[in-house]
Image (tube, rainbow, N blue to C red; front, side, top):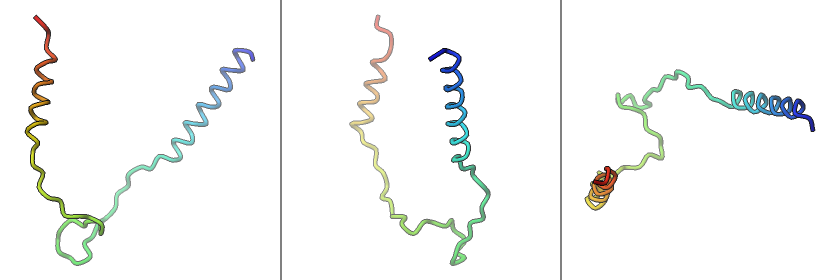
Length: 75
């Protein structure tokens, strides 16, 4: 296959992939969210679960501190 033909096929393929990506790209659009019960709070999905408070893992913080200290230049 000649170089010109390969370039042409590559260009056609790249334009095809680009056009498919642009067609599939969903732009965010403005929507109005309203509360059903009129409670004045943000609407939550029905499957939203109650989240327990997150506690920091001190061992992980110690590991991250140790890794950050070991990245400096060696004297």
